[in-house]
Length: 198
Image (cartoon, rainbow, N blue to C red; front, side, top):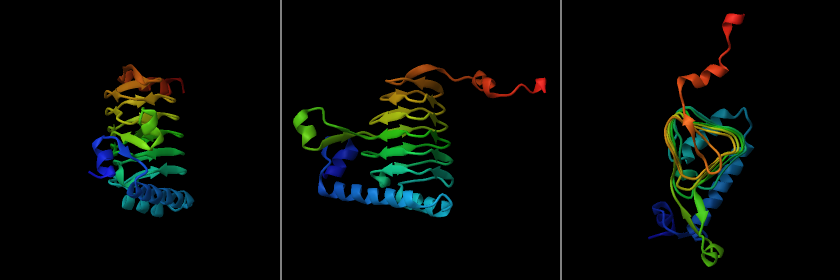
């Protein structure tokens, strides 16, 4: 079993192995090139993401700066939007659904270091898949760690650290991120203007 196969199977693996280092360096070069594209170069940005990501929808936008260590392990759905400064460490596969909005300064961290001191010092890591469902809104400064999942329709409050599974259609927040309450049709009322007063 190769080190990449170990990583994708969720086993401990040697992150310093030569082929992983090569792919990581290639992805760093891709991130550098992507971040040098002008904001007006929308076509070039989209072509690059479509070519290098595992899967994309037709319509998406990833603002710069953007950093990703394994572009070929990332899948994004239709109508995906990531605001400035997304860091995406895809030690394992990262799968993101349709209509997902990610606020600025967020991190999706699919890899972690071994707890054992000697293994950690030797570059041993683990990586678990991260799954984000459809219609999810992730506020700014959110961290999503290895193995986490977020259910369809949920909202993650700004500054949260998602370390486990968040069910569908809830507002969740905190460190560690926990369900605050279910979403309901009443939630949007506070954002809707009262046109009767005009």
